[in-house]
Length: 424
Image (tube, rainbow, N blue to C red; front, side, top):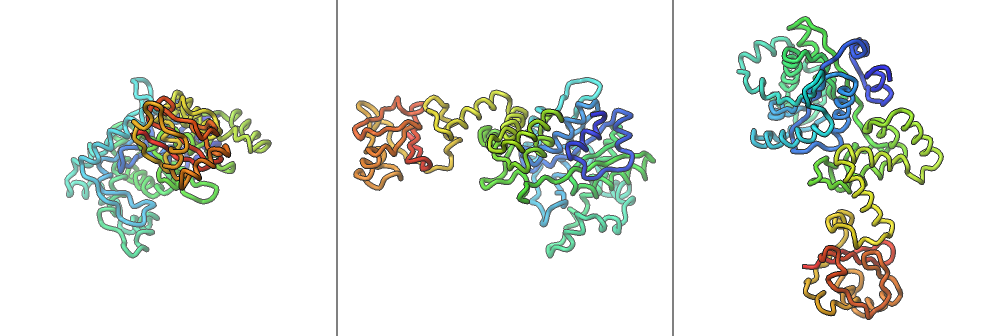
């Protein structure tokens, strides 16, 4: 790609942009920023598109700034929201900031150099303003009519609950962020989701009016799935970048389960694979979609970016559980991730000591069989598996060493009905 703007266009990352931005990105080193809301201590996959935008910007020689909104986070952005947010305390925001900084460091290079990345808390200046000074130096440049025309405000005014003065003022605060970054770092570009266009243009206007300088904005599409569902939302909830909230295995599976209609756009959005590699995967999707080569490439690339190559190998190994391999050598934590939504039965660990527990007895203690008689018939028919190995002998006994790390057994009836046995 000749320029960053060309790269953004090819990857489908330009929803709208100010006139002259393409030329600016082609002709000079640009300092650009994106704001991240510190409402949680972790980013989620819905944050990945703006994060990747900053990372691509830096790879093209431009300087990225991530604003973690410690100041604006105390107010709440009305963009895309139907009701007022719960306001966070300063302590909650500070804890969340620490988590976001660490995650951003996986994508951005903060080492000294010609275009180092920066993470900045806008509370540095917003918390220092007094009300009269802010109204004088920022508020007087915006008419109420101008603010009412913004889509984020308009939508909320149509809602029965309306919009509070607190959130109504958010546009002024974000505009002030852009001005401060322009003054402090020569920042001339703000990026964001398409719902941020009104906030971004307000900052551009403030810089023009107060400094007579030109600034730019670029907004990216809001990502949805081919079925129209908001990207990153699953039946089990949000998909987080924090492994404590969403395990690397579940994270990998999220990408592996991508719809054929979405996988090529997601490869463009969320990976650094080049045009030739993505075109080749596109051809494979068209020729043999059942092989899911593009989904595997997507899952590997994004999981490696977020969690490291080691977790990719671990997730792929755990995925083999779903296809019938022996799971006795897998780490117990990986097994728990794979089977976290299946029923479990607790059995005292000492029942497995000595000669161990009889196979029929164990099966009868689980939801797989209602009685010992039913358990015996099930085992004799070859319908029970222990750690994915068929056990057809009703006289078989299981000891502690058969359990994964001495604490887990996976019992399966037929092809789909699984039960976890936890040794307690």
